[in-house]
Length: 364
Image 1 (spheres, rainbow, N blue to C red):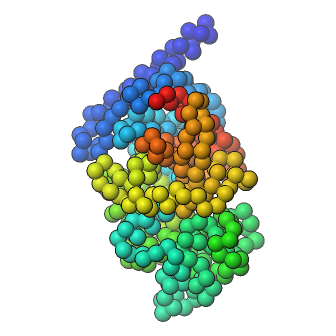
Image 2: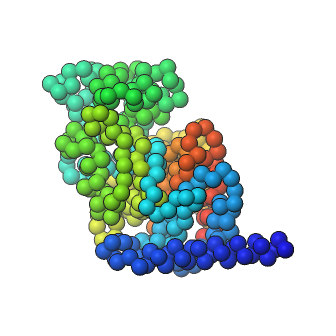
Image 3: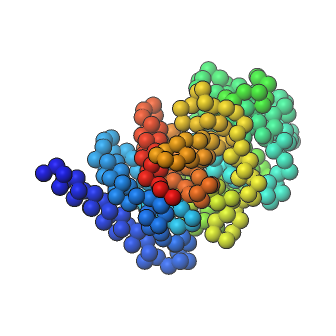
Protein backbone atom coordinates (compact mmCIF):
# COMPACT_ATOMS: atom_id res chain seq x y z
CA UNK A 1 0.00 0.00 0.00
CA UNK A 2 1.45 3.40 -1.06
CA UNK A 3 0.49 5.16 2.18
CA UNK A 4 2.27 2.58 4.36
CA UNK A 5 5.35 2.68 2.12
CA UNK A 6 5.66 6.45 2.43
CA UNK A 7 5.17 6.29 6.19
CA UNK A 8 7.85 3.62 6.54
CA UNK A 9 10.30 5.69 4.54
CA UNK A 10 9.63 8.72 6.74
CA UNK A 11 10.24 6.64 9.88
CA UNK A 12 13.42 5.22 8.36
CA UNK A 13 14.68 8.70 7.55
CA UNK A 14 13.99 9.88 11.10
CA UNK A 15 15.86 6.88 12.50
CA UNK A 16 18.75 7.61 10.15
CA UNK A 17 18.84 11.23 11.38
CA UNK A 18 18.88 10.05 14.98
CA UNK A 19 21.61 7.51 14.25
CA UNK A 20 23.89 10.04 12.60
CA UNK A 21 23.53 12.58 15.39
CA UNK A 22 23.96 9.92 18.07
CA UNK A 23 27.28 8.84 16.51
CA UNK A 24 28.50 12.42 16.77
CA UNK A 25 27.74 12.49 20.49
CA UNK A 26 30.35 9.78 21.03
CA UNK A 27 33.09 12.30 20.23
CA UNK A 28 34.73 14.24 23.04
CA UNK A 29 33.99 17.95 23.31
CA UNK A 30 37.68 18.64 22.63
CA UNK A 31 37.49 16.72 19.34
CA UNK A 32 34.01 17.77 18.36
CA UNK A 33 33.91 21.43 19.44
CA UNK A 34 30.13 21.60 18.96
CA UNK A 35 27.19 20.57 21.11
CA UNK A 36 24.29 18.64 19.61
CA UNK A 37 20.70 19.78 19.36
CA UNK A 38 17.44 18.37 18.03
CA UNK A 39 15.39 19.58 15.10
CA UNK A 40 12.37 20.07 17.33
CA UNK A 41 14.25 22.16 19.88
CA UNK A 42 15.64 24.29 17.06
CA UNK A 43 12.12 24.93 15.79
CA UNK A 44 11.89 22.60 12.78
CA UNK A 45 9.18 20.05 11.99
CA UNK A 46 11.15 16.81 12.18
CA UNK A 47 8.70 14.74 10.12
CA UNK A 48 8.68 17.32 7.31
CA UNK A 49 12.48 17.39 7.29
CA UNK A 50 12.50 13.59 7.09
CA UNK A 51 10.18 13.80 4.09
CA UNK A 52 12.55 16.26 2.45
CA UNK A 53 15.52 13.95 3.01
CA UNK A 54 13.60 11.03 1.48
CA UNK A 55 12.77 13.22 -1.52
CA UNK A 56 16.44 14.14 -2.02
CA UNK A 57 17.47 10.49 -1.82
CA UNK A 58 14.79 9.36 -4.24
CA UNK A 59 15.16 12.10 -6.87
CA UNK A 60 17.82 11.77 -9.60
CA UNK A 61 20.41 12.83 -10.56
CA UNK A 62 22.33 11.55 -7.56
CA UNK A 63 24.73 14.46 -7.21
CA UNK A 64 23.42 16.30 -4.16
CA UNK A 65 26.01 15.75 -1.42
CA UNK A 66 25.29 17.24 1.97
CA UNK A 67 22.86 19.22 4.11
CA UNK A 68 23.92 20.64 7.48
CA UNK A 69 22.11 23.04 9.82
CA UNK A 70 23.63 24.74 12.86
CA UNK A 71 21.29 26.73 15.10
CA UNK A 72 22.34 28.67 18.21
CA UNK A 73 25.72 26.98 18.15
CA UNK A 74 24.25 23.47 18.06
CA UNK A 75 24.35 20.95 15.25
CA UNK A 76 20.70 20.08 14.59
CA UNK A 77 20.84 18.45 11.15
CA UNK A 78 23.62 16.58 9.37
CA UNK A 79 22.73 14.53 6.31
CA UNK A 80 24.87 13.14 3.49
CA UNK A 81 23.83 11.59 0.20
CA UNK A 82 25.09 9.22 -2.50
CA UNK A 83 28.40 7.92 -1.06
CA UNK A 84 29.35 11.17 0.71
CA UNK A 85 29.80 11.33 4.48
CA UNK A 86 31.11 13.60 7.22
CA UNK A 87 34.81 13.22 6.32
CA UNK A 88 34.36 13.74 2.58
CA UNK A 89 35.79 17.04 1.36
CA UNK A 90 34.06 18.67 -1.58
CA UNK A 91 34.85 21.46 -4.06
CA UNK A 92 32.63 24.39 -3.09
CA UNK A 93 33.76 26.26 -6.22
CA UNK A 94 33.12 30.02 -6.13
CA UNK A 95 31.77 29.92 -2.60
CA UNK A 96 35.50 30.01 -1.83
CA UNK A 97 35.45 33.68 -2.87
CA UNK A 98 33.32 34.43 0.19
CA UNK A 99 35.87 32.63 2.38
CA UNK A 100 38.59 34.83 0.85
CA UNK A 101 36.56 37.92 1.75
CA UNK A 102 36.17 36.65 5.31
CA UNK A 103 39.95 36.16 5.50
CA UNK A 104 40.49 39.74 4.36
CA UNK A 105 38.55 40.86 7.42
CA UNK A 106 40.90 38.83 9.61
CA UNK A 107 43.89 40.44 7.89
CA UNK A 108 42.42 43.87 8.63
CA UNK A 109 41.78 42.92 12.26
CA UNK A 110 45.47 42.00 12.53
CA UNK A 111 46.50 45.37 11.07
CA UNK A 112 48.05 43.72 8.04
CA UNK A 113 45.81 45.85 5.80
CA UNK A 114 45.03 49.43 6.80
CA UNK A 115 41.98 50.06 4.67
CA UNK A 116 40.01 48.53 1.82
CA UNK A 117 40.26 51.94 0.16
CA UNK A 118 44.00 51.39 -0.42
CA UNK A 119 44.87 51.09 -4.12
CA UNK A 120 45.70 47.65 -5.44
CA UNK A 121 49.04 48.57 -7.05
CA UNK A 122 50.43 49.68 -3.69
CA UNK A 123 50.30 46.06 -2.48
CA UNK A 124 52.56 44.93 -5.33
CA UNK A 125 55.78 47.00 -5.26
CA UNK A 126 57.52 47.58 -8.60
CA UNK A 127 60.81 46.15 -7.33
CA UNK A 128 59.15 42.76 -6.93
CA UNK A 129 56.48 43.07 -9.63
CA UNK A 130 57.89 45.28 -12.43
CA UNK A 131 55.27 43.93 -14.82
CA UNK A 132 52.26 45.10 -12.74
CA UNK A 133 50.06 47.35 -14.88
CA UNK A 134 50.15 50.97 -13.75
CA UNK A 135 46.39 51.31 -14.13
CA UNK A 136 45.99 49.08 -11.05
CA UNK A 137 46.60 52.23 -9.02
CA UNK A 138 43.09 53.34 -9.99
CA UNK A 139 41.51 50.28 -8.31
CA UNK A 140 40.94 49.92 -4.59
CA UNK A 141 40.65 46.74 -2.59
CA UNK A 142 37.01 47.69 -2.08
CA UNK A 143 36.52 47.58 -5.86
CA UNK A 144 37.90 44.03 -5.93
CA UNK A 145 35.66 42.90 -3.08
CA UNK A 146 32.54 44.35 -4.70
CA UNK A 147 33.30 42.95 -8.18
CA UNK A 148 33.55 46.44 -9.64
CA UNK A 149 37.28 46.70 -10.42
CA UNK A 150 36.85 47.77 -14.02
CA UNK A 151 39.55 45.31 -15.06
CA UNK A 152 39.36 43.74 -18.50
CA UNK A 153 37.81 40.58 -17.07
CA UNK A 154 34.34 39.06 -17.13
CA UNK A 155 33.53 35.47 -16.21
CA UNK A 156 30.73 35.50 -18.80
CA UNK A 157 32.95 36.84 -21.60
CA UNK A 158 35.90 34.69 -22.65
CA UNK A 159 37.13 37.40 -25.03
CA UNK A 160 38.24 39.54 -22.06
CA UNK A 161 41.98 39.30 -21.44
CA UNK A 162 41.49 38.60 -17.73
CA UNK A 163 39.01 35.74 -18.11
CA UNK A 164 39.94 32.88 -15.76
CA UNK A 165 40.17 30.46 -18.65
CA UNK A 166 43.14 32.42 -20.01
CA UNK A 167 45.29 32.25 -16.88
CA UNK A 168 44.20 29.38 -14.64
CA UNK A 169 46.37 26.95 -16.60
CA UNK A 170 49.49 29.12 -16.36
CA UNK A 171 52.35 28.43 -13.96
CA UNK A 172 52.29 31.90 -12.39
CA UNK A 173 48.84 33.42 -11.96
CA UNK A 174 50.02 36.68 -10.42
CA UNK A 175 52.43 37.37 -13.25
CA UNK A 176 49.55 37.02 -15.68
CA UNK A 177 46.76 38.85 -13.86
CA UNK A 178 48.86 41.81 -12.69
CA UNK A 179 49.35 42.69 -16.36
CA UNK A 180 45.60 42.99 -16.97
CA UNK A 181 44.62 46.65 -17.56
CA UNK A 182 41.72 48.66 -16.19
CA UNK A 183 39.30 49.34 -19.05
CA UNK A 184 36.24 50.70 -17.21
CA UNK A 185 35.70 53.12 -14.36
CA UNK A 186 36.34 51.26 -11.08
CA UNK A 187 33.46 51.13 -8.61
CA UNK A 188 30.81 51.96 -11.20
CA UNK A 189 29.39 48.60 -12.29
CA UNK A 190 29.17 45.04 -10.95
CA UNK A 191 30.94 42.60 -13.29
CA UNK A 192 31.55 39.13 -11.90
CA UNK A 193 35.16 38.10 -12.53
CA UNK A 194 37.40 35.53 -10.85
CA UNK A 195 40.41 37.82 -11.15
CA UNK A 196 39.02 40.07 -8.41
CA UNK A 197 39.02 37.29 -5.82
CA UNK A 198 42.42 35.98 -6.92
CA UNK A 199 43.93 39.45 -6.42
CA UNK A 200 42.20 39.79 -3.05
CA UNK A 201 43.77 36.55 -1.91
CA UNK A 202 47.13 37.55 -3.39
CA UNK A 203 47.04 40.76 -1.33
CA UNK A 204 46.57 38.72 1.85
CA UNK A 205 49.54 36.62 0.80
CA UNK A 206 51.67 39.74 0.24
CA UNK A 207 50.88 41.36 3.59
CA UNK A 208 51.03 38.16 5.65
CA UNK A 209 54.03 36.49 4.03
CA UNK A 210 51.98 33.25 3.92
CA UNK A 211 49.98 31.48 1.28
CA UNK A 212 46.27 32.19 1.53
CA UNK A 213 45.71 28.53 2.41
CA UNK A 214 48.24 28.68 5.27
CA UNK A 215 46.75 31.97 6.51
CA UNK A 216 43.28 30.38 6.46
CA UNK A 217 44.52 27.30 8.28
CA UNK A 218 46.10 29.34 11.08
CA UNK A 219 43.45 32.00 11.58
CA UNK A 220 40.18 30.36 10.51
CA UNK A 221 40.35 26.60 10.03
CA UNK A 222 42.26 25.63 13.18
CA UNK A 223 40.10 27.75 15.54
CA UNK A 224 37.01 26.06 14.04
CA UNK A 225 38.47 22.55 14.32
CA UNK A 226 38.75 22.18 10.54
CA UNK A 227 41.53 19.67 9.96
CA UNK A 228 40.90 18.36 6.46
CA UNK A 229 40.81 20.65 3.44
CA UNK A 230 42.43 21.23 0.06
CA UNK A 231 42.82 24.58 -1.69
CA UNK A 232 43.99 24.63 -5.28
CA UNK A 233 47.15 26.64 -6.03
CA UNK A 234 49.47 27.38 -8.95
CA UNK A 235 53.04 26.17 -9.38
CA UNK A 236 54.42 29.11 -7.37
CA UNK A 237 52.18 28.39 -4.38
CA UNK A 238 49.63 31.16 -4.96
CA UNK A 239 46.28 29.97 -3.58
CA UNK A 240 43.14 30.11 -5.72
CA UNK A 241 41.34 32.86 -3.82
CA UNK A 242 38.61 32.69 -6.45
CA UNK A 243 37.49 29.18 -5.44
CA UNK A 244 38.32 25.49 -5.70
CA UNK A 245 38.43 25.14 -1.94
CA UNK A 246 37.54 21.61 -0.79
CA UNK A 247 35.78 21.33 2.58
CA UNK A 248 33.40 18.89 4.21
CA UNK A 249 29.80 20.06 4.35
CA UNK A 250 30.05 20.27 8.14
CA UNK A 251 33.16 22.46 8.01
CA UNK A 252 31.52 24.60 5.34
CA UNK A 253 28.68 25.14 7.80
CA UNK A 254 31.09 26.07 10.62
CA UNK A 255 32.44 28.94 8.52
CA UNK A 256 28.91 30.11 7.83
CA UNK A 257 28.08 30.06 11.51
CA UNK A 258 30.91 32.54 12.18
CA UNK A 259 29.09 34.92 9.82
CA UNK A 260 25.66 34.21 11.34
CA UNK A 261 27.05 34.75 14.85
CA UNK A 262 28.64 38.19 14.45
CA UNK A 263 32.09 36.80 13.74
CA UNK A 264 32.26 34.49 16.75
CA UNK A 265 32.85 30.77 17.09
CA UNK A 266 31.85 29.57 20.56
CA UNK A 267 33.64 32.05 22.89
CA UNK A 268 36.28 33.16 20.37
CA UNK A 269 36.01 36.20 18.11
CA UNK A 270 37.30 34.93 14.75
CA UNK A 271 36.68 38.13 12.81
CA UNK A 272 35.29 41.48 13.93
CA UNK A 273 31.51 41.93 13.95
CA UNK A 274 32.00 45.19 12.03
CA UNK A 275 33.57 43.27 9.14
CA UNK A 276 30.70 40.78 9.08
CA UNK A 277 28.29 43.72 8.82
CA UNK A 278 30.30 45.09 5.90
CA UNK A 279 30.21 41.75 4.13
CA UNK A 280 26.44 41.79 4.29
CA UNK A 281 25.85 45.47 3.45
CA UNK A 282 24.35 45.80 -0.05
CA UNK A 283 26.52 47.59 -2.59
CA UNK A 284 25.06 46.52 -5.94
CA UNK A 285 21.44 45.63 -6.70
CA UNK A 286 21.17 42.26 -8.46
CA UNK A 287 17.41 41.81 -8.59
CA UNK A 288 17.24 42.17 -12.36
CA UNK A 289 19.90 39.60 -13.28
CA UNK A 290 20.00 37.07 -10.43
CA UNK A 291 16.93 35.02 -9.48
CA UNK A 292 18.39 34.05 -6.10
CA UNK A 293 20.01 37.28 -4.85
CA UNK A 294 18.75 40.78 -4.17
CA UNK A 295 22.14 42.44 -3.76
CA UNK A 296 25.90 41.98 -3.51
CA UNK A 297 28.14 43.14 -0.70
CA UNK A 298 31.79 42.17 -0.23
CA UNK A 299 31.88 38.85 -2.11
CA UNK A 300 28.71 37.77 -0.28
CA UNK A 301 25.17 37.88 -1.68
CA UNK A 302 22.12 39.05 0.24
CA UNK A 303 18.45 38.14 -0.09
CA UNK A 304 15.15 38.49 1.70
CA UNK A 305 12.63 35.74 0.99
CA UNK A 306 9.40 34.50 2.53
CA UNK A 307 9.42 30.75 3.09
CA UNK A 308 6.24 29.43 4.64
CA UNK A 309 4.92 31.90 7.22
CA UNK A 310 8.27 33.57 7.89
CA UNK A 311 10.47 36.06 6.09
CA UNK A 312 14.20 35.37 6.17
CA UNK A 313 16.84 38.04 5.69
CA UNK A 314 20.04 36.18 4.88
CA UNK A 315 23.45 36.44 3.26
CA UNK A 316 25.01 33.62 1.31
CA UNK A 317 28.05 32.31 -0.49
CA UNK A 318 27.42 30.61 -3.80
CA UNK A 319 29.45 28.23 -5.97
CA UNK A 320 28.88 26.47 -9.27
CA UNK A 321 27.02 23.20 -8.99
CA UNK A 322 24.61 24.36 -6.32
CA UNK A 323 27.05 24.82 -3.43
CA UNK A 324 25.48 27.37 -1.12
CA UNK A 325 26.21 28.57 2.41
CA UNK A 326 23.34 30.50 3.97
CA UNK A 327 23.85 32.60 7.11
CA UNK A 328 20.72 33.89 8.86
CA UNK A 329 21.92 36.23 11.65
CA UNK A 330 18.40 36.98 12.97
CA UNK A 331 18.07 33.33 13.99
CA UNK A 332 21.77 32.56 14.66
CA UNK A 333 21.40 29.87 12.04
CA UNK A 334 23.38 28.55 9.09
CA UNK A 335 22.43 26.10 6.35
CA UNK A 336 25.18 24.49 4.27
CA UNK A 337 24.24 22.70 1.06
CA UNK A 338 26.77 20.94 -1.18
CA UNK A 339 26.21 19.55 -4.65
CA UNK A 340 28.27 18.25 -7.58
CA UNK A 341 25.93 19.41 -10.35
CA UNK A 342 28.82 21.33 -11.93
CA UNK A 343 28.54 23.13 -15.23
CA UNK A 344 25.36 24.54 -16.73
CA UNK A 345 22.36 22.86 -15.24
CA UNK A 346 19.82 22.93 -12.46
CA UNK A 347 22.19 22.74 -9.50
CA UNK A 348 21.32 26.17 -8.10
CA UNK A 349 17.59 25.72 -8.69
CA UNK A 350 17.61 22.42 -6.81
CA UNK A 351 19.64 23.83 -3.92
CA UNK A 352 17.31 26.81 -3.65
CA UNK A 353 14.27 24.52 -3.61
CA UNK A 354 15.81 22.35 -0.87
CA UNK A 355 16.57 25.47 1.17
CA UNK A 356 13.02 26.72 0.64
CA UNK A 357 11.42 23.45 1.70
CA UNK A 358 13.70 23.20 4.73
CA UNK A 359 12.94 26.73 5.96
CA UNK A 360 9.24 26.25 5.35
CA UNK A 361 9.37 23.73 8.23
CA UNK A 362 10.88 26.30 10.62
CA UNK A 363 8.22 27.39 13.12
CA UNK A 364 9.98 29.48 15.79
